[in-house]
Length: 118
Image (cartoon, rainbow, N blue to C red; front, top):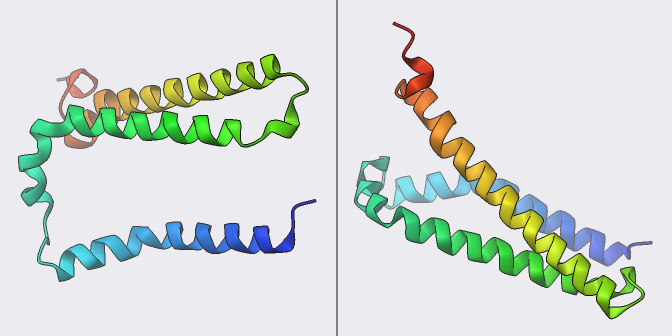
């Protein structure tokens, strides 16, 4: 059973992350970044941001998979679980990125092959 203190910490952390959807735009607006047009200059660094976030996802999944040593009996099983977790996280991240980048965004802006039915 999960200790009560741990559950409370997870709940508070989840609430803090959930409130970021409202707090970050309000902070950006207060700082004078009212529009996303100021972020257009960062599009040349998109690949760097994608690679950095992929490294973050892989590193976090590596850490989380390694922190649960009680789930496996042998070191080989732990290693296999860790590699499987990291591979699954990386493939899921890349799949979601490609779907959003190549399909969802062109559909939202009305560009791309999905909208050329004229």
